[in-house]
Image (cartoon, rainbow, N blue to C red; front, side, top):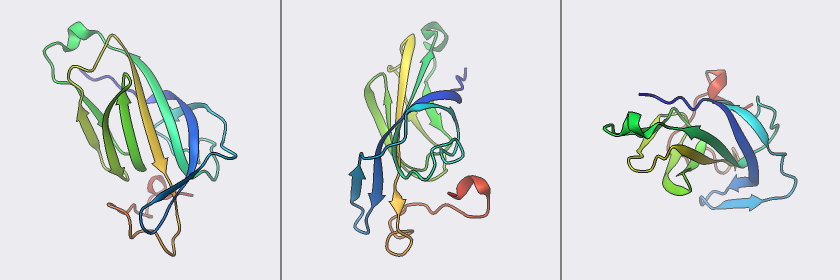
Length: 151
């Protein structure tokens, strides 16, 4: 059984962020874009959040028939997030990811309910190309395809 969570997600910008050469993150909450609904997966620049580098909270509600999964080992699978991500399921922290567009997953056995809320906090900080990028990255994104190059 597979539950596809692609589609409409609520989003709320939390902070502008900038990563420093020592990997510290600097945050500012001034002048944030408005909250809204976004189709996911997506590039938030293409989706209308222009020139924003920072942290956005994405929320998706979904239902599960627990009888359908009682004998199964459920995983929450992501195809990729740019760049830092904190994942919460039903208000419980389930994990962290750092990287660009590689897949990752979490075992969520015992965490699903009939009605669920998935929260993903994505942080795509500004990176100064002279002092930061790419020296503080685990995985470097390419520039040969439009989907992996920030406009």
